[in-house]
Structures are given as C-alpha cells and as structure tokens.
Image (cartoon, rainbow, N blue to C red; front, top):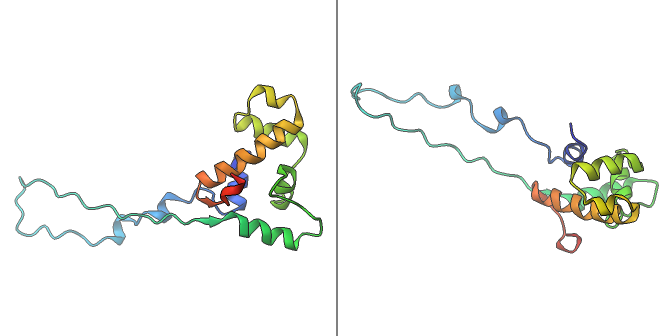
Length: 138
C-alpha cells in the first residue's frame, strides 16, 4: 500500500471492495423471459448507483488530537498530522510521501518548503478522495 493510501485508510477513505459496493448477480431478480423470442434484442439491466460517503476529516483529526497526550496541530503541520494518524513522520517518510505525490524538485531540497507543500497537497488529495476538509485549509 502506498504511503498516501495508508493515510486514506486511516481516515476511512481507502478503496472499498468493489464486490461490496456492487450487488452480486445472484442478488438481482432473474429476468422474466417468457414470451420473448430468441431474436429479440437483450434489454440492458440498469446499474445501481452507489452512494459515495463523505468523511469529515476535520472532525476525525480533532477527535484524535483531543485524545492525544501531545499538543499536535494537524491544521498547520504535516508532522503532527502524520503523528495523529500513527504513521511514520520522519524526514525519510515525508520525503517518500512527497516523492509519491510528485513534489516539485526545488521544494524537496528544503524541508520547510517541502513540509508546507506536502501538508497542503495531502489535504487537497484527501478532499479529492471523498474527505470533507475545511476550505480555509485547502
């Protein structure tokens, strides 16, 4: 699993099993083919839309922060955000995450710039993957 995939998973935004989201063929009623000739065109069965659930990222992270003994400010710090999710927040891990998310090369050489870029990008990607993130953090 990718590093960002672990973040999604910790927040409940990980990819769900497609089989769980789509009803199995055996769950659908069998079509009534009585009176239909063999040459009649098949009628496509409509697909069932699957609801996308939105995860309130802010609420989840605030709850984790309140329960944490350390005073972690996930709203401004990628290190604190990773610590709240019980993920590796080391420089090596952050560089790996930045590489995974295609951080510009010029920011990779300066850990402060990389961290700021990484924090903003992670929050944007959380929002793009079904996370409800406050607009002021994007």
